[in-house]
Length: 133
Image (cartoon, rainbow, N blue to C red; front, side, top):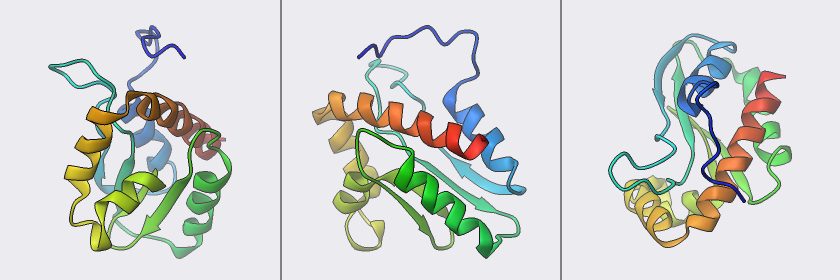
């Protein structure tokens, strides 16, 4: 698994994710971690979270389907409360009820399981391709 692929000719994943999601509606808020920690260089557990200015319920099935069918390395979950999010199910589970430990869970996975982060990064790319298609 090559985690150091040259991506200089392609936009960063955060930019691609924002473009893909913007095709479904105007974004009021967006969050996606950088692929690699800016200081230490390790891969970060990927996820994408956003809020549409005007959410449309009919879009939920599209995002849920992409999260369930596109990944091949890990199980992923789509949630749609105030913010919508596609994240590895492991991250959602470790974040606890209501996601109160989300940042701690992301840091824990990132620092303890780089193999998972690399596999999940491949999955998020597949999910974005599915949503773009």
